[in-house]
Length: 231
Image (cartoon, rainbow, N blue to C red; front, side, top):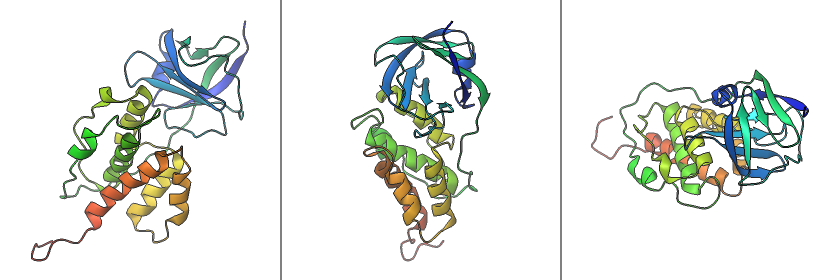
């Protein structure tokens, strides 16, 4: 029997691990992260080392990378019964961890125009196209500000990983530094330089896209009303 590494699963994707055993396709394999796609376009299971970017949907290992997962993109592994079965070892979900999320603000009467952002979903390069990162940032800030969210997201137009993160963002979940930035920005913290810099360090363009989306929602709420229109 192959050795099994204990890990902690996010409640957002725990059902993918604890359900019946089924095949999962390796979407990408990096030294600190493994992305597995299961049936259902937005059903993605990230498996990350302790020093990786901790996505809110991830299974977290207790040890740092780099790690040789023994697989590459396109390979098929098995997930289910609390175990991710890889060729040379297994990863067993023995506990859960609590991902961070933004607090939901009191409802506002301002209306955010989601149409331009929704029309751009899927545009850009990489596992999470920049347009999707912008939408994620806007969704998180809008929830924190109390703005109405879009009824549906065109998830089929983008990558599986990006679709899963859009679903999480609409529910208010994101990586910790993004939650911190949104929380501080909505609270009116004056000096946001440090929190913005931490977000900018995410990926090649993801951090910049997330900040752009957050700013879009903030600008709607903070923009002065045209002269003559009562508040």
